[in-house]
Length: 265
Ligand SMILES: Cc1cc2nc3c(=O)[nH]c(=O)nc-3n(C[C@H](O)[C@H](O)[C@H](O)COP(=O)(O)OP(=O)(O)OC[C@H]3O[C@@H](n4cnc5c(N)ncnc54)[C@H](O)[C@@H]3O)c2cc1C
Image (cartoon, rainbow, N blue to C red; front, top):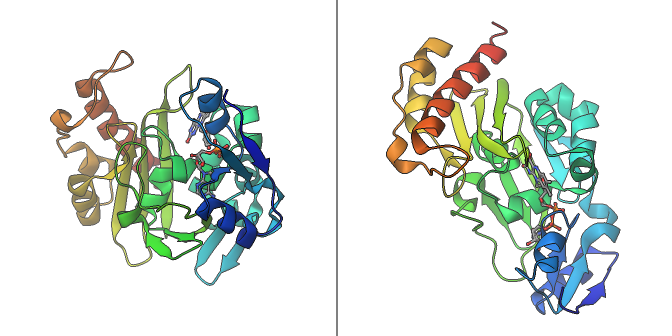
């Protein structure tokens, strides 16, 4: 690890000033510190967001849940507000990594990092959430921009994410057994207006919506409708863990399972 300066401000304003001056945000360090130790990432200054109380917490705001960027996965998993409003989100958070990762990892860190196999981005995208930053609000459809890439600008910090409460939703992860990231994860959400959004993680260069599945499930919200959709493997990645064809099959199977779970079949 290269030497760096460590800052721990108490306000978002002070953190923003540091970030604008070039400091790198540190959330739970679950990705960033490991990358720095391997010298895959370096920062002259780290700004630890862990001392900023206003970045943590979960609150109901009308027909949405607003979750602070520094809220840990374990707190989302244990929250009655989350399990009451969006049980699929609590379930997702409760199956991220292991106990340590859930105790330290954060919503903001996961979404800002945008790992192509991470779970949270699929929930953010499928629920049509809004990413709230120190500068603006960004719709999920505009936020994720490919492998580890997002719409965040230099010095821009995520402060919270606003999740609309859907009519019903489920997340089905087929986990990579060593890392517990998603080999394929599918988040299916039927929104209050009846529209269906389906987001897939683990399949390629980043989370994406699947138009064919959304259309089929919009017409008939059944596992059979999901099964009738052919998944194109040519757009998916293949590696030592799974071929593209295997991942394509998993997208179909996990979507069917998510719908069956929602329908309690
Ligand atoms: C062993 C292991 C297993 C895991 N399994 C899973 C899994 O099953 N599913 C899953 O989804 N994830 C998994 N993760 C990832 C984990 O959930 C963390 O959320 C992720 O590693 C990011 O960590 P962090 O929140 O501590 O952020 P950090 O590592 O501190 O930061 C990550 C990146 O985000 C930036 N950042 C952090 N906060 C902000 C902010 N508020 N605004 C702007 N930029 C910010 C940082 O500068 C850095 O670039 C796993 C991680 C590990 C180590």
